Image 1: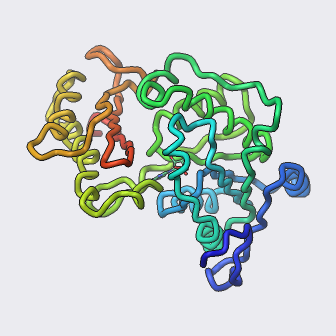
Image 2: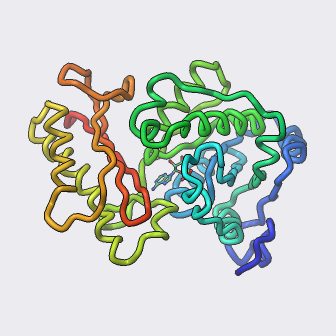
Length: 303
Ligand code: AMP
């Protein structure tokens, strides 16, 4: 299918579900939302498209817990600090709509940038220092863009629940905190990271990996596994855990370029010291060829 039309060109029945309503316009979306019976629970899955099985896990969770499921597909320019990354971001809209149909999504919102950020737009959600570490340090302004668009989507949809992946753990932390701090009437649900059999976390960016880089990309999950193994063996010095992750990227022949290997306390999402209360989370970001990948893993006491 090559059409970029906002509606599937084949019958949705061919994909196992009824065609979702596809809405670009905010006013049309509001009309759909206003027409929902008040007793129906709405689940929202915000995405940037290029949907894969990880997104599907969020949608399936929403489908199981809510009466209606909406997906937004918006490659949000405000959260990209590199024009090349924004330009190269995959946008297979027709395939995304097929996947949404197959998953029983009721509505897909595909706004364009001028609709989300009209002329004169000038109000942003800016997180405190947690927004400036890790992803925020590597991608200045990233979380200002993320939180602003998530708040706008929550306003547009007024969902009962909004679904986010642990894959973007810092994002999920910041969204959850925004919801609490700004007293938004929505329940944030976090869904575990879906991985390939060899451990690679599913990501829309994986399709851009050159075949020879696919195996290099495994250094991220291998580094996290090294930290988790050291933690399970009793290591409680975050610096030693960071070193265990760095070692995977320092192996002879390694080509992946590490951006950070960090351990944070999950309570404040700031770099952990030995006195930071458990649980902790290990996080890595690395460039593999031209592709930037992130991954993370919980470090918890065995129960
Ligand atoms: P994105 O389209 O990359 O902005 O992702 C949309 C949502 O899907 C975010 O909440 C992500 O954390 C989540 N997500 C992305 N990859 C995965 C994955 N491998 N497993 C589970 N959730 C994911």
